[in-house]
Length: 435
Ligand SMILES: Cc1cc2nc3c(=O)[nH]c(=O)nc-3n(C[C@H](O)[C@H](O)[C@H](O)COP(=O)(O)O)c2cc1C
Ligand code: SF4
Ligand code: SF4
Image (cartoon, rainbow, N blue to C red):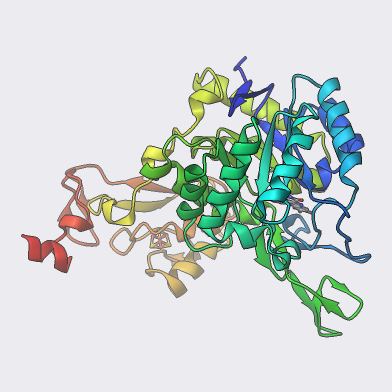
């Protein structure tokens, strides 16, 4: 069986599945039960200075559903912990004592002043926890007070606070980044410049989950008003994965450990994050939707996958897909794909024809000899993948790469087999000028 043990910034955990800083890690009771269920680690719900913050006494969550009412996006206006600092610290110390083999990292958010960080760090270190995560990500409430994403959006602040933490603590420092920024590489570089041991991302995305159209009120609302919240869950996974990969392939942050967060619900999601450069993953919405026991499926699934692929450990998977990511200009413009419909699997719903006819390249027939029949016209197909994306039958439509020497009936050109990209293409004015 593949070894799922991971060592992330020197912190060893029996598997790469950590619960992210959020309600699942809010207190000893939760974390105790999470560890019983098998989670490899937790990032404790963000601690702040006393007096504790106050949450609204009304709906603080909202959901986006798929047609089958599966929750695919989640919105929240919750703040950091609303429990006294001392109680949290005592519980963290007890949990770490009882579960020495699990990772216990403490998330922190205090004002952007040196004295505040200098005060809280030794108290946290005294709990025996394994590391700290700096919450530079919460996009609502705390950011209005100059914390959370208000820090994460200013690279100079990130560097400054990270330096303080490295100066006043011996613990590994993980900097949690906000996705509410134009180019994620800048805050990641700033964290590295400040001496961060790792970055974790993403925190939640600015969002309004909906509007009550009867009362014309933002959702969720407390009385007559609401506020934007932070968005997470399966729908944010592609955004998070891109940001993780951007950092993994940036030469300036190469080798900086990354904890991948955002929409991880299954072992597959986790494996994808890891292949894109994450050393482990953190999970919030999936636990809030399905409970702690989902980790059992994640552990089994990842283990089976690694065994099937002959990959000996989680570490051996880290970043394996990163070399496959290039800037668009380096894509092979000589490569040609064509869609192929498996007539044995086709249920003749017609969806592929409708979308290709209306919005792509009119490359799928609707009938043959007066009967419904869906077939790709290779002479029109550009291999765009739209029909594959909408076909309700898995594997019914696939893309076939034309082999070197084959004729592309759309362009009339023979596939050369040579790789050529935009940097050298004759239609590229800069390339032509250079030639
Ligand atoms: C209700 C709720 C509360 C959260 N509170 C915190 C927090 O206190 N500190 C923090 O760093 N992130 C917080 N987050 C963000 C999560 O840790 C995580 O970054 C985000 O939800 C993305 O992961 P997911 O898609 O698995 O939920 C919170 C998220 C939710 C849904
Ligand atoms: S790949 Fe694109 S162009 Fe080709 S048949 Fe499908 S939708 Fe049409
Ligand atoms: S969408 Fe798929 S199942 Fe439906 S007609 Fe096209 S190929 Fe057949």
